[in-house]
Amino acid sequence: MKMNIEVDIDWMDEEGNVDDTVKDAVVNRIVCETKNAVSKTVVSEAQEKAALVIDKAVMAEVKKFLTNKVSVTNEFGDVTRSNVTVKTLIRDAFSGVMEQKVNQRGEVSRDRFCKTTRLEWMIDSAVAKHVEHETRRLDREIADRVKAALNGRLKEVMADSVKKVLKIHDI
Image (tube, rainbow, N blue to C red; front, side, top):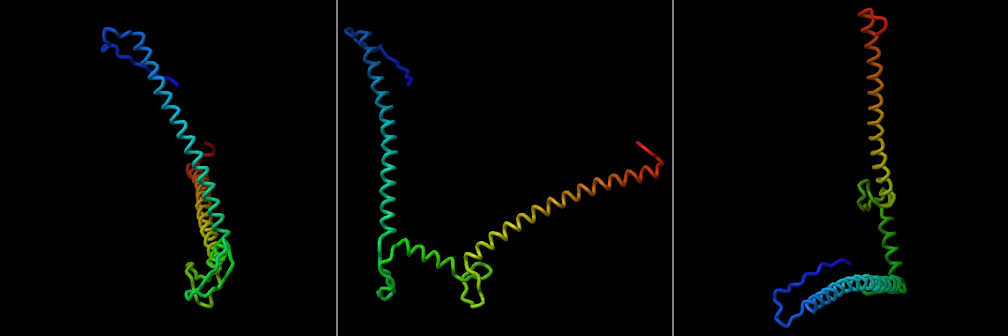
């Protein structure tokens, strides 16, 4: 730690001793700087430890909540499922959403002719986007290569034609 200490001795009275004044100023400054440095370190460490303790407590509560057994009721209060964990309910709800039948736009459809599930639609859409992107990239690459090859060959043919017209054998 580096510190700068300034001592104002203009105000000293007749009984004041320069050595005592300087010593008191140095001690006060060292105490103040040390207190500030220790305070910052302690606060930082306390915040880190508090965050760890809070994270553990939150994770324990979430785990407890997810493993908690509940009963599911319908709109009339009749039990439809009993003694099931919240985690199982979440998994079943997610599976239900992913297994819904959807149309070509990914919208839920009650049409009996729609056979595609949301999961299949999501995978097909992702693959189609990727294929579209790669196809465009390859198309640009092929077009650039064909242009370069044609330009090269065209220059050769033009050079040969000019040589024949001008009756030049080698340049």
